[in-house]
Length: 367
Image (cartoon, rainbow, N blue to C red; front, side, top):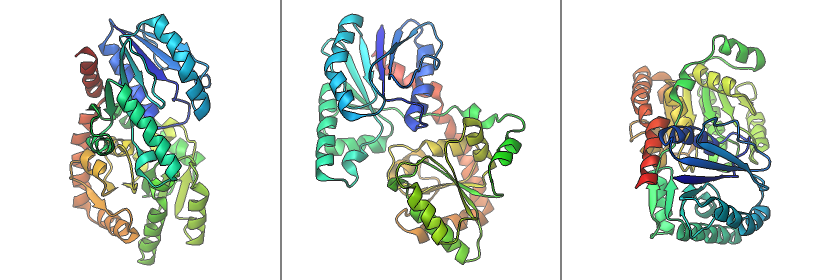
């Protein structure tokens, strides 16, 4: 069996999509040793060092990982030649616009449809819905990351054939921190003691503004709890930094961007409580990371977070900073609640091992 993977959307910028691809497909390649996998990567991100396996081959394309019109143009010309040359049995796409072929089965992964669901310009929503409609009509199977996202896609495209495949995590990598890693992080970064942690790039849907307001509300009640946010700028970092300064929280709220993997995992291990205030997510990989690190978690009450945690965690209304503050206060002072959250996460995390998820994906290829 020959399987092509259009990974031209992957670049060096940290993301859940990158983590998903690296984790799930490494296990899939091992589970299907007699199948040949061809990974097409972008001109600006060489993936050839990601998987050193005999059944994996790499092809560098002229396509950039980002940029609209260039991708669209190459989709019209480049892929037809590749399909004629390789004669795939399956071809999987991870970005729009979808690659089309009548000679093999096409799978397409959708992480979320925020470009349709979230408020934007009517023109942007229109073109996004058109591209997603085209992908869903052309693909033999749509893969998405949660039952909540499956339901959301079906609201817009009721005839879509969708297979739910969760995101996963390398549990051991979060639990086996190198000796001395904590001291190294502390020597490089201003890490407070006994802090809250939130993870995600700076954009409106991550809802950091309401989280900062909640930290200020706690401070006004005499509850001083430092907050660390790890994320790169997607447009709102300056706005959040200004709010932190205006509220007099610059010594209490710490932002770190572009940190390496070891430091990232060490900070998870060092935190007291993980808080995830997002308004919208297709999944929520940081929840798995916090579970793997045995941390109590406090979450937005949104469907996908309730799905991942099976309605067994502490939730808040993400649109109400008072609700966030109250939930955090409850977790800070209720040790039994914190322990229950940790115990639940330690069991639930095993459902998201990359090996289990890759086995599900394998079944999709061999049916």
